[in-house]
Image 1 (cartoon, rainbow, N blue to C red):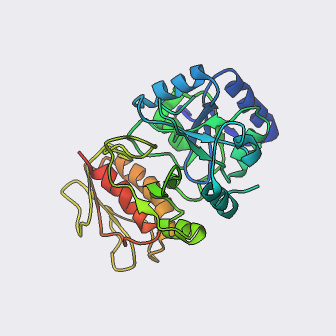
Image 2: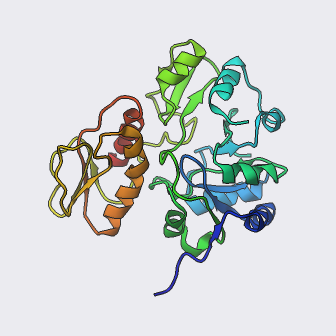
Length: 302
């Protein structure tokens, strides 16, 4: 059988230098982060950014996230306020705006992403390495499954720690949560000492993750179900559900972090097994469950 994963490279020093060379030549690469794998290229290069939009088939009005090595590098490009500094100190380890006046910025935790950023002279535009509106990849093989040979170089950083896209918060005025993620609104509120508003209007796309249809596995997704449809599969959580060939448990212990980490992986598995739909049992709607339900709601939109 032909090996379709020949464009995946171990994250050693030699391959980090190869990744750097690709990016400096305006060639996007697959890059691991703690959330999901990104499609990374030079954020300062219009040519690179256009390639990202083209590869992802991403609408031109949907902005990208820019990844920086640290706050010293970020200062060169971004105006920020005291709320940003508080969140940076709490969560961060030591042009691409789609015509808008703001950009989403991130300082990744993943050691491979940080090592690469450290040897580059510019930040990385790195949205999730998937076709627009589809499931984000949580391992290197997923990136290849998504793009095949269109992406020549994917750094392998193993399975992503979180498995869902990052939290996005708007700090240009009163703090507004634009996208749910592992860092919850409550955690942010505790740090800032302010109420965090939840954005529910998507007429103006201000950040990634705000399109109505998103995170789709390519087959119908139905929420809050107890049984699968005919020729469909059921995603479950907790001990009360019995195992069967069309039941897929994302956390038998009911752990929401484990469930989030397994969600996309299981949805991809179900699609590969040629099930015609995915029904999902009721997921607790608190903590990380808020982000899981957000992804499922977007995936279920027609």
